[in-house]
Every structure is written in C-alpha cells, then in structure tokens.
Amino acid sequence: MTEANLTPRQQKWFASVRAGLERDTGKTLARWVAIARTCPERAHRARLEWFKANHGLLQNRASLVLSEAFERRVAWDEPEKLIDALWSDLAARSIFEAVDAAARAAPDVVRSARKSFTAWSCRVQFAALRPVRGGQAMLGLALTPDCAPRLEPPRNESWSERLKARTTLSSAGDVDAEIVALLEAARERS
Image 1 (cartoon, rainbow, N blue to C red):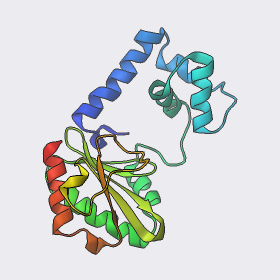
Image 2 (image 1 turned 90 degrees about the horizontal axis):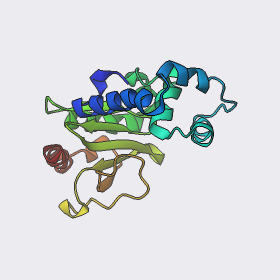
Image 3 (image 1 turned 90 degrees about the vertical axis):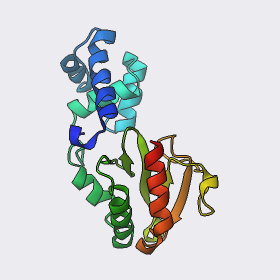
Image 4 (image 1 turned 120 degrees about the vertical axis):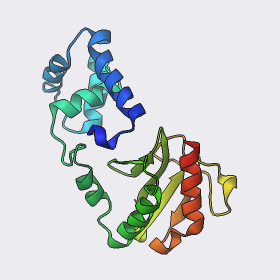
C-alpha cells in the first residue's frame, strides 16, 4: 500500500510492524524475504500458516514479508486496479461510485482498497463497502444499528470491528440523504 492510501495512524502502524520485525526477531526484512522464498506453499493463506508453524511469524509480520517476497495478482500499491477488479459489476460499481462521492465529501478522508472491500478512514476507518450478489453492495458503518431503521448488526464481515452496523444497498439511488447523513455521522465519530 502506498502512503497516500493510508491515514497517518495506519502509516505509523505499518512502520511499527516493519521496525519491530528485525528488533523482535533478530532478522532483517531481507533475511525474512529469503526465507519466504523457500516456502513450498503457493497460496497466500498456506504461506501464512507455514510461517507460523515453521518460524513463529504471525499474520501481520508474515504478510509484510510475503508482500515483499512475492508479486500479487493485483498489487496493493495500485489501488485503482484493486477497485476496478472488485467493482467490475456495473450495477455494483454505480453504488460504489455514489458511496465513494458521499464518503469523500470531507477533505480529510482517505479511501483504501482491499481485496474484498473498499474502506474510508479519517483517523480510523468509519465505513466500508463490499459487493454482494445481484449487483448490490453491503455498506458497513462505525455506528450502532439503532442509529437508523435500515441498519442491522454485521454478520461475519471481514472489515474493521469498529463497523457495528450495516445495510444493503440495491442501487445508486439507495445512497440517499439518509445514507449521506449516516456516512457523515460515522466520519465525525472517527
């Protein structure tokens, strides 16, 4: 991920993971990359498990090492490619564009692309959106479900645990004044 796609808090966290790797393990990132290239596994999850089982390196640090050691199909430092891949369905893409415009209305908002969702943050993440079947999208917000009748508690979402409410959006028209106000409220709490 490029720093332009991270909040200052996220930049600091990633820097601490990188700095702590050598301090806590006694091996440089370059040494860990060399070790990663000896891994017999090909899938990312299997490589993470291999690192834990064979070297005691847990997910965050192992992910850092693996991102340096192996090219990914969609590069994290190319967020527009991630977004294009994730939002390839035209109906879902129109929902994404409406939410993106509303979420980034404030100047301090950072949008970051993930493999399975797109997130918006200020100091911390306040919203995320992922495509669902049928050209719909699921919006997660850093609000409680009782803030609006159309919100419900999340179920097995992969985004931040801070997002305590979600709603399904069926079209770009669902990104109405209420959703815009909910996005703003979530941003202000972040």
